[in-house]
Image 1 (spheres, rainbow, N blue to C red):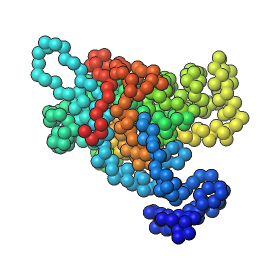
Image 2 (image 1 turned 180 degrees about the vertical axis):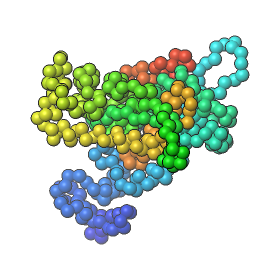
Image 3 (image 1 turned 90 degrees about the vertical axis):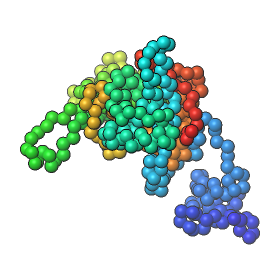
Image 4 (image 1 turned 45 degrees about the vertical axis):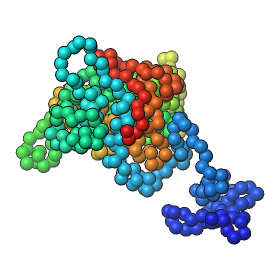
Length: 424
């Protein structure tokens, strides 16, 4: 409300209850909460006065972004609201993501009973994998989803086990994983991509079991190689194998990230990823690598200038190198959050099912990140998910480009299409 003399506005802060005075000066509006009147960044109270007088500006139609990487909210209030809404929004976000999947067309004249919708099967499977519950215990969730209209029909209780065992769905899950990260492209633009691997145990034996029975059990496990954006902890690309090396997965993870539309400035990884080829791939994509040198590393680039530049930066400007490399810890935080929220032990028995279960957990984790960013940065993920494109499309293709075939899924002919609005 304006003051009696009309030269200033009295603004009440809804967070603290305190009243602030926003005055008109020759240099612009100044708030009484600012210790330095020469500050160029306007506070929330100044913006409130501007919106009161001029109205809110029209946001771009392509993505609803009310904040930028420089002023994202890290407050506990935003985090609390996101966590409170996660259970309510998870199903709706998953429904929106999977509505881009089109069911394969059965060959004309082929006999058999009507198949379960591929989208319905993926919906039940991803929810079951993220809840870390058995097929029988997750059946009640499927009943509620069918009653709510999130799935078209109530399937058999074994649907999750059967879907996870299909090897032809692995490329589709990889596509959906990267696609689920695309709403945060703008927030991650010019940022850092961190690459690392983590293991998922197939069996879980706690300390009491070992102490009581005095036996040692070898864990069967699979290895997930992840590329994450350090600003939001979104998983941009992944690869899953058993005991594969880390370094060979580096080019695939980085190329997939860039092909999806991300434009990172740096890529950081530990010494396990150090190689001339990885530096060459990063340089080819216009990204500077930050990988620590080993004791026997030499500056000879062998045709790779990025290796030589990184070698001298590591040895002559260590402080600068360490400032960038410290962002690698973000991928450890993402790994920790993934296992705490989605559960680390895998319940599937088959090797293919275990790989697909890890990918399902990663998709669920990405959806929780989108929910959090909805409250922190004002990003509406459904705008991008409704106008998605396949991985075969050019990185700079418009988001409403024609339907594209999902890479590597010829056997099920799943396509990405424009989906209905969220909550339908």
